[in-house]
Length: 194
Image (cartoon, rainbow, N blue to C red; front, side):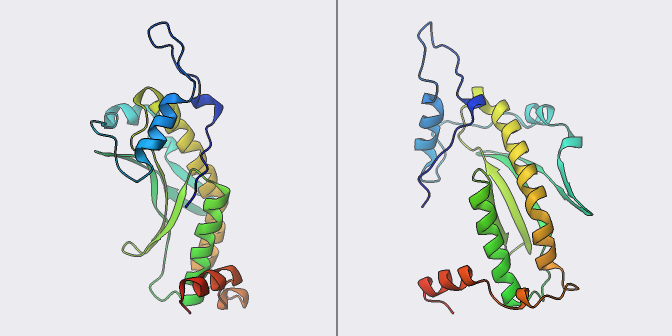
């Protein structure tokens, strides 16, 4: 389990509370503690969908890398709040197991490089999903957090999209992609899988 948590400077400037300065990270730390187990803070509701739509106009809700385009969706579905790319790439039904292992490895590696974004294979939708979950975030920080989430989601997806596209393209032949990645093999061995 990851125990690190990074705060960008734009989020650590807080307003004064009744003339008394508050610790710059107090609300954000409260949020982290309240949602560490995956729950939503009691009584918390996300901003209104219409308000969030004003913050990020439709023209900014797509990611392009070469000839590939993916759509960024606003997730304002109480109690959930965040941004997601539900189909960064589509996964063909005939994708060989070695390539599926490469997809898992790419999700893991991309998530390590872009810590705010979660990358995963959505088997039900047969796609790779990327998302930033802001559920429970302090509402007075919601707008700068959405801006930050959009920036990191867009940059990470642009960075990762060519690799995901290559692995999922059945017309691309590769001796390397025909074999499971070594790190994935070692993780599978640790879990007792082969």
